[in-house]
Length: 393
Ligand code: PLP
Image (cartoon, rainbow, N blue to C red; front, side):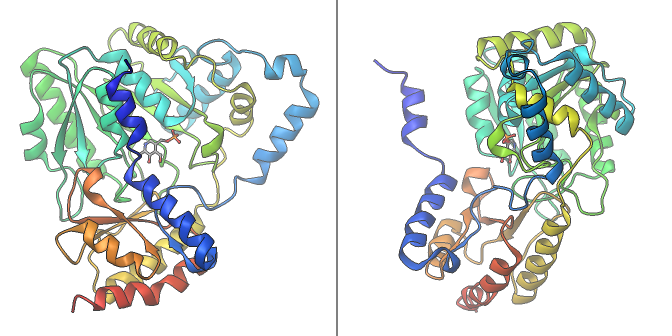
């Protein structure tokens, strides 16, 4: 007898993967240049050249036994120290290496944090629209996912909806800014209000409520500041990833930072180490740990994404699509011209425009466009976006 839940997850691929597979079929039929695949969040800019140079240097100069050996379960001490120093230099939050845990990217960080803090019956709030894997991660940690929808006008937090979602069982809220799928960056005002609400609820229920910041897109922001949540709220766990900031999604590297302001932060960190152990996530890839240590303050050239954002947002809103202007990440979230976003995405396929309907993000009636593609692909796709929307006029 297999685990039915796992079987179900394995047999039912995510909507995004299904679209990507459809794209592969179409690429084989009509040529890759004629398929406008906006489905996946795979960075389209290369990792900075320093990343490859660092890897080559490590491979040629370091003792291979050390380089390829296990590090400490929570990550090499000098790697964690370098990251803690960098966090302090940028945000001044007293990070210390003994509260940093190296992981295989944000996905691993999220599952580790959720398993570290959740017990059966706990509730974890996701702000919709949200990254669909949150449901999988939260439920595997034995908790229940509770959805609080954001304001449709600008996709900032709807505080009435959030307050209603918080109960005596709330253990955490996941905050993802810049956001997948909207590209919206939560403003400082919003974060201050969020901290105030959560502090009030902690007092009311006499319990701790964590913020889990899911931060793969922190460095992908266009001319706006992304508030650092540990500076505003004490009970914060940060899940950081280099997948998008250094264009290294296949290399699986990131970290968890446990805020020192959490009461008994050492105990929370120990639970993080325990969850990492129980989930088999000890010792993130050594070569990548040393690489991010030596490239700690580097980011890819996000100006390419900004250029794509400007072209796509400008053209699509001119054609009559509605969208909140994204300030970061590489996603545009447009309102479907018909109520059923799945039907709209099916219709878009006629032009080989591959878009993701929003239902699995917990917010119906929208479509996500991942614009981490080449500028020329966007240019070529625009006439089809126009024809598509004109069909509704
Ligand atoms: N969280 C969000 C919001 C994401 O969009 C992604 C990946 O696209 C992840 C987490 C997982 O990132 P990683 O590749 O670092 O595991």
